[in-house]
Image 1 (cartoon, rainbow, N blue to C red):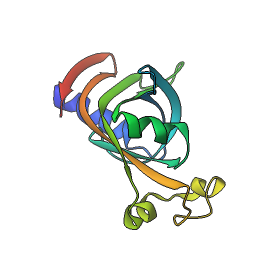
Image 2 (cartoon, rainbow, N blue to C red; image 1 turned 120 degrees about the vertical axis):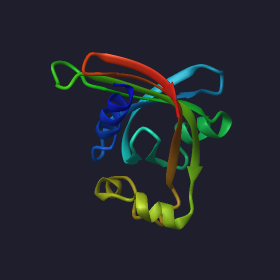
Image 3 (cartoon, rainbow, N blue to C red; image 1 turned 60 degrees about the vertical axis):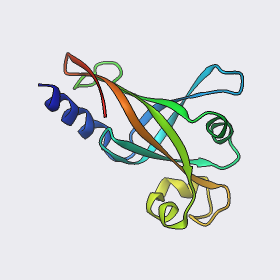
Image 4 (cartoon, helix red, strand yellow; image 1 turned 60 degrees about the horizontal axis):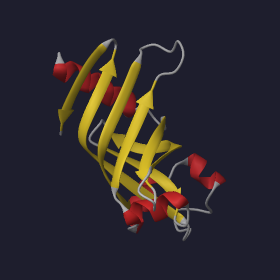
Length: 141
């Protein structure tokens, strides 16, 4: 059952451009949460996002790389799920990664993958708490 829930959670997270909540630690040591859209994901193992190099998220993660990501179905959306991942996050700015993570909606914020304000951040999961289809498991990766 545990592996089946991990696989179901991975399928949900890997759907194209899912919205989720990213929680980072601010400069005063408090958690802060904001919505963000997934650029790409490898199941629950790692997730990439696109951010502005000068935004508060970039400043916070440079100061403290601990993070949490939460995907949740809201209202009456089936299947019911709450996928909470805890791990580390880093900025990756090599041009190959920037090109790979670029997707159509990025052009609403950046001129292209060469834009100096365009950055990719990668979240790597260390542990998880999954609630999928009325079953709950926790574990580490």
